[in-house]
View 1 (tube, rainbow, N blue to C red):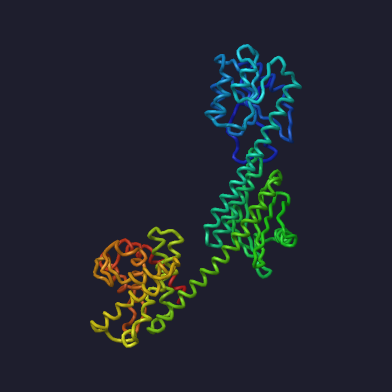
View 2: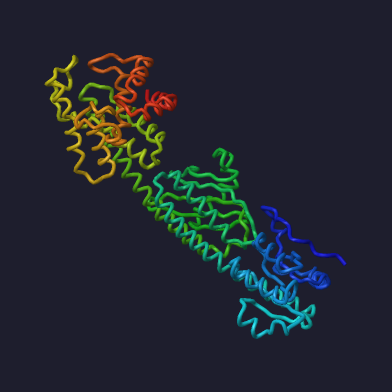
Length: 506
C-alpha cells in the first residue's frame, strides 16, 4: 500500500490548483497511517484535496509543527514513545507554539490511559475519538467538521488583521507629505490588505499602480511589482483604460477576474484609482474593509492636497521675499534658489531625514531677509565697506532673526535660525554671537556653505565671479576654520550632484 508523503518545504508561491488542506497524522503505528491514507486519499472539500503528512512520534510531530505553519488539522494518537506523548503534543501546540487555529483531534486505542472527560477538561483539543469508533464515514465527517472550523477561524483572523492594517495604513499614510510617496504607500497598504483577504493557504504576489484622472487625462502616480519599470503607454492599455473608465463612471470599486480596481474621489472633483492584479476571488469578502480603507484614503488625500497647497504657498512667499532682498541689492535673483538646492543636498548628505531637509530647503532662501533693514548707501556700495559700515551690515542677521522669530511656523522658525547664524564661523570668529563649532545650529552651518559657494561663484556688485578652481581652493583652505569640516567633506563628495542641480536653473 502506498504511503503518504512526509513533510517537506512548500513552494513560495503555489497556484490555486496546487493548494491543499494540510493534515498531520501522528501515530507510532504504520498501519494507522496506511488506513488513514486509504480512507482520505480521494477527499475533497471546497475544491481542495488533502495533503497528509506523517509523524511517528510526539517529538517528530512537534518538530514538523515548528516548521509548517499552515497545517489545518492534526490527528493525534495519545500513547506513542510515552503513555502521554499525544497529550504533551497537544499542550505544546497551544502553549509553546502558540497555535490557536490548528484543530486537534485526539484519537486513542487505549482510552483508559486518557479518559475522555479528563482530557476534554484539561487540554485544549477540539475532538476526542476512540480508534474503534472512527469508521471511514466517521473519519470523513470528523475531518470535514475540523476543516470547516479551521476555515472560519482563518476568516475571522483575516478580518482582524485587515482592520489592523487599515488602522496602521491610516496612521502611516497621514505622516507622508509627498503626493508620490503617499500614493506608493496607499498601493503597498492596499496590497497587504488584499493579501489578508485570502485564505492563509493562498500565496499571491500582486502587481499594481496608482493613477489619477485630472482634466480628462490619466496620470500614473505610483507603481509596484511588474509595473515598476514600465512607461505610461505600456501600462495604460485599451483594456486597462476601459476598466478604469468603468470605475469612474460607476464611481465605485470592483473586482474583475483576478483584478481589483479601487476608486476614490476627492473634494476637488478629481478621480483617483488603484489597479491591482493577481487577486484571488476568495478575497472578495473583504469588500467592506476595502471600501472603509479607500474612504479613509480619500479623506487623507484631500488633507494631503490641502497641505501641499499650503506648503507651496509658503514656499512661494519665502522665495519671493528672498528674491526681493537679492533684487534690492542688485544681486542675481536666482541666488536664493541655488542656496536652497545646495542646502537640501547637504542636509540629506549629513543624514537629516527628508522632512528636515525639505524644511532647510524652504527656509534657507530667507537667510538675508534682514538686509531689508540695511540702508541703500551701504547695501548697494560697489567698493569695500568701512569698519563702521560693516558693523551696520552685520546687523542684518539680528534684523532677520527678529523679523522671523515671532512666528510659530516650523519653516519660519528654521528661517529665523538661519538668518541669525549663517555668518557664524566654525572657529568662533564669525558674527553676531561668535559661536564656535557645534554651538552653531546645523541649519546655519549648512546654509553658510551654500551661501558662500554661490556668492563666490557668481558676479556681485562688489566683485567678479571666481573661477571654479579658486572657489574650491577657498573651501579647502577654510575647512575647519570658517566651515564645519565634516560638511565641507560632504560638499566635495556631492559636488557633481550640486553642479548638475544648479546648472538646471541656468
